[in-house]
Length: 412
Image (cartoon, rainbow, N blue to C red; front, side, top):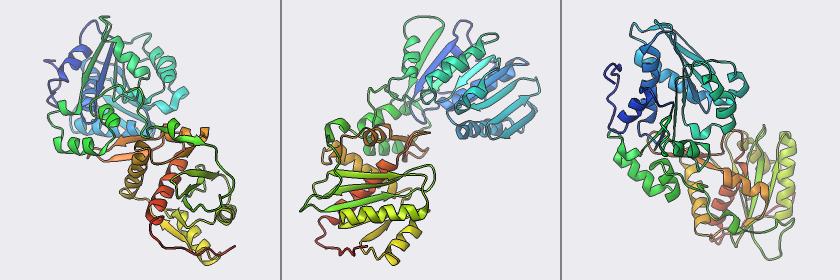
């Protein structure tokens, strides 16, 4: 590392990774590290070294999404833009690159591009957050790029269960000199905020903290626990005499689904409705029809974006008196999701034994911002509308079933 351009000071756990990246025997270097542990900074510095050490090298950086790839490109460009090392750079969405004066290139790409990635012949390959890249993309598209000139493949990530990244990591622990694996946690980074890490420890489910910050490979890291155990019955089509119902609605008018989740006073999700690719008038009529059947005590409807005009129309034109808007914000969304997580963990809620319903809860994920804030959503390409509607319905039920206030319902 003596000739490494010293743009940062590697901490103790980063140095062995750089050594493996620059030795003569190791081909696959796999680094399993917690959030904000310095793994991305390590990889950025290594990419710069590979690009600047010899002329006409192609370093290929692949991130799970285009947004992530572009973010890393901008960060790396800032490190060297004011130096005489840069010949040119290009930062268009999905096609970012830095060209050095020695004619080496670092290209930044998204794994979502899949087939458009084919055809490159690269010297060095870096996979950023590899656990979130499809195994097929790694094996069938990216690895063949190294067949002709390939020298090193650096694979970095926080775990995501025991997927292919777990297998790749373990290959570096069995003595094959072509593979080396390394692990460090968020606490191993001397620059990390111990206070933020402690906040995350206090607020996250244990399995998620262990995965995201300790870099542990957990068999099941679903945010929602006990899903199959709590899925105890089939949905029903009409209300049961004597039961009281509460409805949560997550509104969408494009590719996502509008979902209505219906909970009774016994904390059972007895039914849900979902629609997509319909017009606003059709959606309002579907909501009205569902309200007429179930005659809920209270309805929460997400008021963001398209929701607010629908709420106003239902209140004013259709005289639905027991509707209340729920605004999803950066603070209210984690609150209602955490409340629902606790309901699953404490086994207070019951849900239908329905494959679509359960699948959304099983796929629902969390990412961490740099300040330790949890962000909840479905993975790229999946839906979370059932989860959100159920979280809103749960919030509605918990607030109003003990209120002692009865809300009148005007037949439509």
